[in-house]
Each structure stands twice: as C-alpha cells, then as structure tokens.
Image (cartoon, rainbow, N blue to C red; front, side, top):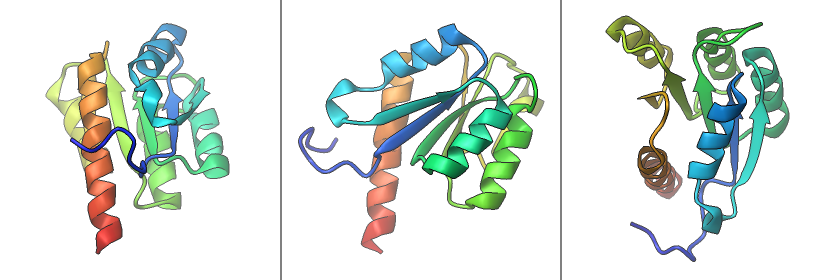
Length: 136
C-alpha cells in the first residue's frame, strides 16, 4: 500500500450506471482522502460523451443500461482511448457476460452490488499499475 499523502496517479473517476443507488454506492466506496474528482453518467451514451470530454483515469461501467449498453460504450471508449481503465459492473452472474466484458478489454468485472472493499482494492491495484507504466 502506498502512502496516503503520496501523489495519486488517479485524478478523475467516471461512474456510468442508470441506477442512482448503484452510482451512490460506488461513489461512497471511493476513498475521500485521495482527492479524486468523481463524475457520473446515467447511460452508456452519456458515459462515452463524458469520457471523451473529461478523460477519466478510471471508469466504472454498468453493463446493462438503456440507450447504449456497457459493452457498446466500452467498445467506443477503448476505440477512442485504447489504454482506458474500465471496471465493468454486472448483476448478471453468467460466465458468458463476464468473459465478454473481459474480452472487450475491461480491467476487471465485479458483481453488483459492489463491495466497498473490492472497489478500494481495485483502485489501489490500478494506482500501482499506472505507477509502473509511468516508470517505464
């Protein structure tokens, strides 16, 4: 674990989910002491637009949403920014859904409702990965 006062590689986080409860749960699981800027989007279309405008370091993406689902939104985001870090969220426990998200390029796939400890652990893992990439 890094020093809490250390420079954070993650600056901006985007949460894309049509459920207010899910967005709030994820947002409340993100540590307050890191100074992250957190943005939200209500569907995949809005998520892609906000990604392009704000270029978040990490995106939490629900897979099942109206207008544009998470799979399609993830495909568009990764076409625009191949190194984008996307954590997919799904209530669907079928291996097919999880493997599809992974094949499309999700950094991780987590079950809904997400556990706060899992979100924090993933953010720490991403911080370390980004630090390694910058050091290269």
